[in-house]
Amino acid sequence: MGILWSLILGGVAGWLAGRFMKGRGYGVVMNVVLGLVGGLVGGWVFSALGLGPTNMLGQLIAATVGAVLLIALVRAIRK
Image 1 (spheres, rainbow, N blue to C red):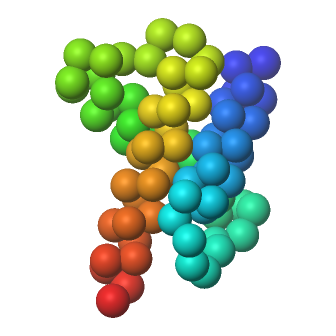
Image 2 (tube, rainbow, N blue to C red):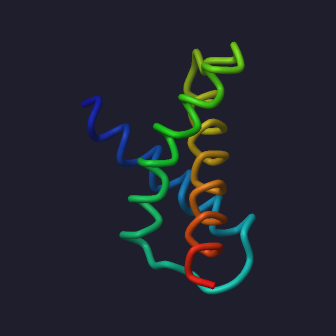
């Protein structure tokens, strides 16, 4: 059940990140991937700052922030 929730949370985080970062979309699958990887990145960044997510809302926020950072990085590399 944890994997299913991670996929759902990653999809929502990727979708939110796509909404925050206007421009060309990456599609549903890439949004899920960005959300999942963003969850790892966001969790690491927030934990390093001493603000590790402790509930589902915190995890969603961390994953969304991480996905936004990844989208910004991908766009910078593509230019």
